[in-house]
Image (cartoon, rainbow, N blue to C red; front, top):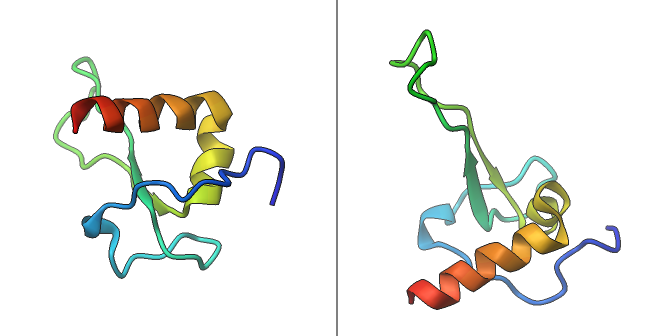
Length: 76
């Protein structure tokens, strides 16, 4: 896709199984909007989307993907 594409196979949640990215590839991550405490409609459901690893890399950037992968390694 682009130079920011993640070349290493990223961790993939079992909860993404069967989900597809908008580009048609299997989902590897779920991205969710945060509802802040001062949101006037706090009871609404946050916007969510499933993304493949390439689209996740495009959204988060190379350093963002590295931070997520580091967090996953540190927690496990």
